[in-house]
Length: 103
Image 1: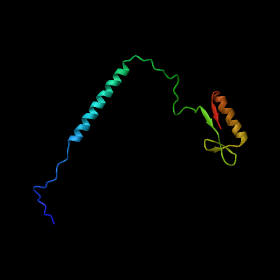
Image 2: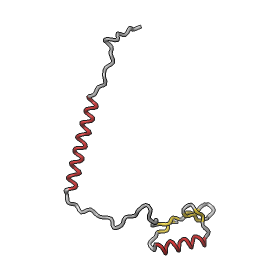
Image 3: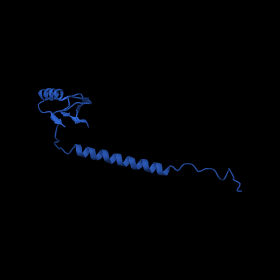
Image 4: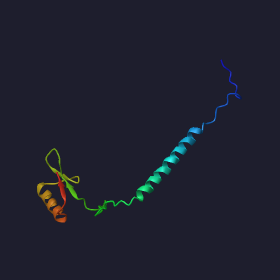
C-alpha cells in the first residue's frame, strides 16, 4: 500500500490559462462584431419599410375552419352547424372583405 505524503502531493490549483484564452477570444469576437455592425449602418442602404403593423390583439386576417371525423365544422374550438357557420362567414367577410378562409 502506498503511503501518501500530504506535503509533496498537494492538489494542483486550477489552470487559469485556458479560461483567459477563451475570454480574450470572446473579447476579440465581440469587438469585431460591433465594428462590422457600425460599417453596415454607415453603408447608406435604403431598407424596405412595413406599410402596416399587425398587433397581437388585432382581428386575425384569416379564418381557419377544421372538419372533425364526424364531418362537423370547428372554428376556434367551437362546433358549428351549417347555418351558424354560414352566419359566421358572412359576418367575417362583412367585417373584413380581404379575410382569408382556410378549410
